[in-house]
Length: 312
Image (cartoon, rainbow, N blue to C red; front, side, top):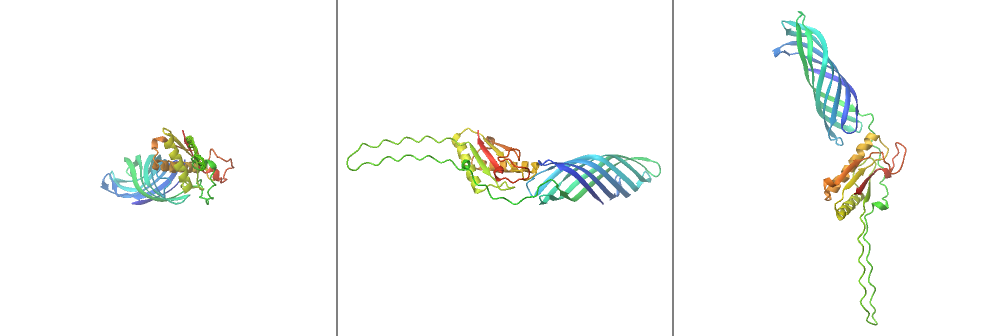
């Protein structure tokens, strides 16, 4: 039994991949050496480079896995019996570790983590107090409770009112047919000519869906527009839908890239529920890179919080 503590600094790319440089220190009591009962204390430090992958990044509970390598140091204090003597020596060598756990999101910038870590230094060399050389492996099974802070993630601002829909957002209207002229009562008249058949309306191929600030939820108006796009796709037949998500510049580029992908996925799922095949939908996330209205960084612009549906 023993304890472990540490601190780490790293970078997350916004797509679930994180890198970390960590410094840890641990102390444990020795109860076995080579399968036989023993006593003593081992103190170990490590400087490790690790990589992680986070699952379900938009959820409150986010499982993760990871692995790392680096330099480990062990100081053995009174470990005995070893070759009829005791070890009071230290050594350092290559170390590696594997991790898995769960992160609980308590705010946009803070997560509480609970995880398991296997840490080992596989090739250590010690000398006993009697002068005997001993090859040893150091391994530790660790349960870790920690807190992770994200310094670059934007805090969620208050939502702006939904933008006023533009003319392109409204569903296409069917043209009205002409009424035949009324018949005269005083004298018989030849039957009125048949009204000309109304031409088939053109296929609408561009649709815009707008979102509230920092949201990927579909409003009732957004669902009507998506329904119109699905109906036009079915009427046109043999078309692909390109779904492109965008964000304004009120957050970091990494956060806005993730937000635009969430918006694109929300529209894709709605189109699939309306009968559009998944293979006929291409999903693209542009983040803040292609604004509809050019703004300075950090400006909230409702027209830029949009998604474009294009029938190709």
